[in-house]
Image (tube, rainbow, N blue to C red; front, side):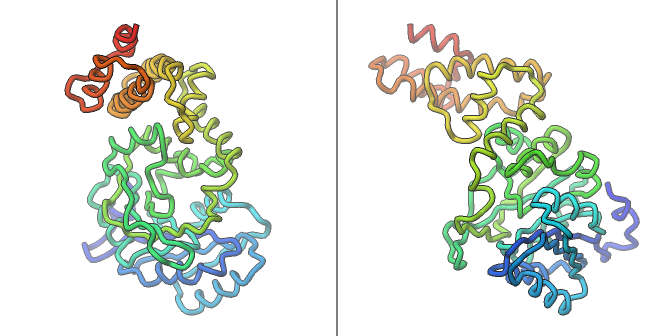
Length: 340
């Protein structure tokens, strides 16, 4: 727990939060993004803007904002460091015990930081707090009011095995905890957030607040949706680094397909899935218990896909029972015996 929290003299004093906002050629949206932080109901903020050698009008916009609000501090990289190195630089430069992330093209709702910091102060066991979010287009029109995300630590731990259930620009975390974990891994191109959440989940707790407190802008140029080959390679590295199971390449590839939504739900993959699940359970030494519901649902879904062209009513019935969790099929061996 940050010492700053224990040193507060009264309940009226608020801990300093540093908002880390990296930007590169963001002139279209950065002013709106920064003003959404300036206008937060929580006022004890350091607004750290990291300009990664922008070549458009971003720098002049940042300077204007810094003149308007003394909480704004600008750091301009001497060379283009790209996102991950810039994020780590921001963490090290931050003066606050808590760090909130923000992207240069998104919009934080006015009560976002206040609600997150209140939650973190009242839950000292939690290391990172994300929020729900809405999705807007390049013109600011709402595309989706909120997304479906897991909320508590166990739900997030289960989901992390297959997807990234935390909106990166929504998070607020304890600086000391993230520094102790080694910050963002610079090898994890395009999935630096996902890989860090894996590490945090294995060593602490993550939560999501259910209320949409950020507008995430989807305009077709987001880093998360470009460079699929790079993303695939990075996810492979993340699996190798954080799931130290020694499982063979076949299982690793299966995991990769599920994270990237490339699973074919074939009978061969289903058989591999059974062995892969056992390998993970054996090597996690009990930590995988929270993932069991996710595995059960994948079993059931895959069973239905495998048997969709088989006219075997009993097998279909057993699969539906498993899906509905009325009478779960506990092993794949049982399932394949019924198929034979």
